[in-house]
Image (cartoon, rainbow, N blue to C red; front, side, top):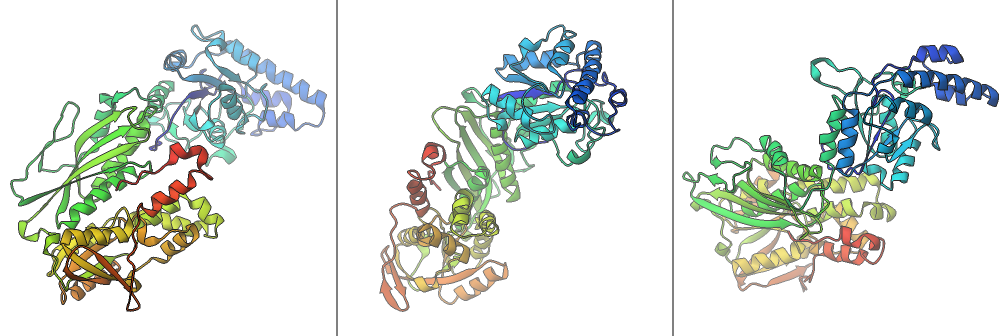
Length: 581
């Protein structure tokens, strides 16, 4: 079953065997009558005959068989009710079939509550283009309905229907004509039957797997519901309840768990010493929305020496959002929490015209023993400043994801771009922060985020009340990051950098800390020294003083702003990034 987000504006049904009860057509008899070899597609066999008169004669035989079958056909269970419900919900409904239009019209005479007038489009084999499994019929219907094929659901009883829908880029759903054992339908078995002229087996199309497998036509409705825009207001309680059933881990400290009707969470902190709190939003659209929210908040909790424990999230979605989009984002959020041992305590989910893209705000809590609390105000002159991984881990991942095509044009290989997109998995600093918090001599930790290393060192200096001198020659720049920044004209020191941790540590203790971090498989470098009181940053290169860079805006924001008037101008409002990490 499909787990990702989707939108549905139109549903296209196969006709014979899907909207009608399977089995009315006798395919072996048709093949015998027209001399078509067993297993060969009937329509394709006739089309391949060299003589036009021969083609017309044999097609008239097919028409006769089909019309007789249509007269004897009966509606599939729920067909009329499903079509009526879809139309009531404002969904466009159509038919895409290898049957003739006259055969479809005759069969519909046996439907007490359904006729061609109930369909917005009927694309029979008389319509332009090749028959299924070619995508022509689906594309023809989508164009006639004025919808994007990706917003179409193609429902059928045979692999040919699935192949046609998939080739058109549409969602697909299989309705097996025979109920499977135990009431469960599974995708691998694609039965023969259905439209006239289809092969007797799944054949070359067997590898195409449907997005959904239905037990009956009625299953169309809940799937379509998840693809329809939601009204403004709170996320529907029944859908939220279904999501929450599998989203909450068994945390004994969570006394009041998230549930429909619960407005608060209650956490038992009686055995804890210090409660650390953090709140941050994610305001740009990404497939990893939940991952970003959890990592960004957890990183900051970890820099205090605390263990991230609980998360509350407020998720605001713009008008036009479908339930599947919300559920996908919430599932991503809960999985990101689960991977890090963080409990999702609850929050609020709403569809509102106050936002134009999803905005998710997280409030995270962590706990730490008072004696282990890391306070930047303990920084002193002589401390060494360490940096883990390298600069701009996050920026590298985002640029590879959002500007991958441009990077390939500029000389990177698709494999290199894919590798950089994978930097998303390196954005957490919990592991190195956990090592540092229990290590002697650690006086401060700071997560590198917006504004990159240039801003992060300044923030550490201000919070610690001391000047910091950085040797630019010792700052580790990952080769892939350097390559991307060179191609796009960006400075890696000013590029957003979640995934890198700044650590200040007493002189004499820092080398053992470096060894411990490296032993965990994490790169680390000593890049500077804490000087006397103040809050400024000094820089040297090759032993000579130089300027520590200042960036008015993050390099990522500058890059996206620069693209708005160019290649992305037509989609500026859609894809503009608001970096608020």
